[in-house]
Length: 102
Image 1 (cartoon, one colour):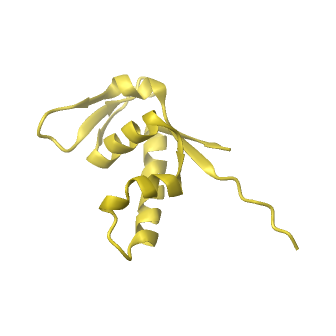
Image 2 (tube, helix red, strand yellow):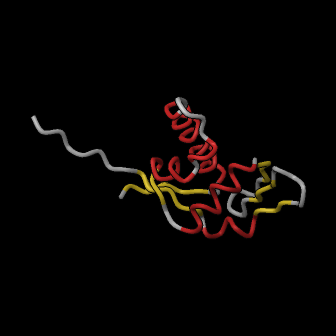
């Protein structure tokens, strides 16, 4: 039996989101205003880093984990992958990131 390949989600920064991010010197968090929903969200440094990373180029979750490898403790890769996935979904809900199947 041959298994069909599972499509890999590719994550991208929402272009319109860049204008809605505000951060201040010395602060690790930022605020994101979604013009689409009218909501303002407090986002952490990882959210800002993910938006910047994905603004440079779209990536799959394994590629994102590889790009962030310096902050993942050895032996905790599975936990980091799970936490990254949840974080990406939350940021997608805010309208900061989007996912497509490629």
